[in-house]
Image 1 (cartoon, rainbow, N blue to C red):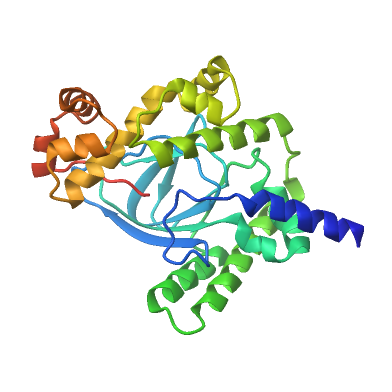
Image 2 (cartoon, rainbow, N blue to C red; image 1 turned 45 degrees about the horizontal axis):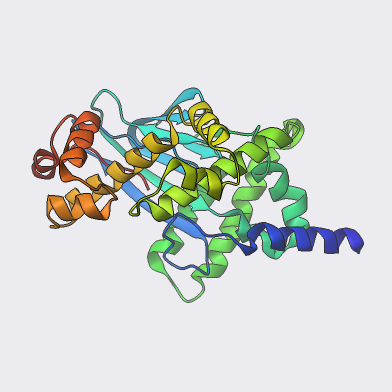
Amino acid sequence: MLYFLYNFVMTLNLYRNYTSNVHYTDDNLKIFVKQEEMLPDSNFHSIQHIHEEIEMMEILDGYLYYNINDEQVKVTKGQIIFVNANQLHSSTLNESEYCKFNVVLIHPSIYSNDPLIYANYAKPIVENTSIDYMIFDQHSSLINAFHHIQQLDAMRSSAYMLGMMSDAYTILQLIYERLETHIPEVDPHHLDDMELLNKMTSYIYKNYADKISLRDIAEYGNVSISKCSRMFNLYTKHSPIDFLNLYRLEIASNLLRSTEQSISQISSSCGFDQQSYFNRMFKKEYGCTPLAYRKHPCDKFVH
């Protein structure tokens, strides 16, 4: 009984202050479903990012490269890649190939409604940063649950939440069974690093439009400026300010594609004080000016 209460309290503490960077359709059900299609001649990429959700992507056509920590993985048609929570990753469409894929993100709090389930099955996976990714082929049982959760999200019947929760538990079961015989030991130092990095990048995601400094980012993580810089350079290969500006540019590129806001409005809303600086940064990253990009968009992002 004491063990049950301990895990229940620990689970509540883990998610009490949670705020997601993912825009869920329904905040009462932290499952995100999306389909993307990358056209030929696109230069698809996303900056290295980290989030608390587990991520699964099924390639419907073509192929995509995932960069997970320091490893690049090619995922092809019919495969599903599972990327664990709190893993630094990005996606790249190289060689101007067409790619169509489905994405499902599940926040671990989905499993916290049952503390014993969380403690015995979810925690050994989602809190273990030594588990980075796995690839399932088209014959895997995971495919069925993956497809069903997408169908339920699309139809939104009166009981769709029950079905999606059931699928989320099935997905956890299949991942656990795949790992059961070789779940590595948790590296507490790496877990602490990932939690801290997640906290600091979340601060950037929420405050990119404001004037924020390296000191602000470090203070939010309750670390020194030197440690903040060291962690970003080690795990993201960018300084904290470079990471901030790359995220601002990612937001700006989306606004250029999806809105009619002026270049100056987008520049200001993304946290750039001077439009000339924004233009230089954008051209350096995308190889063209914001105006040219708006006329011929060349990048898309998963989420």
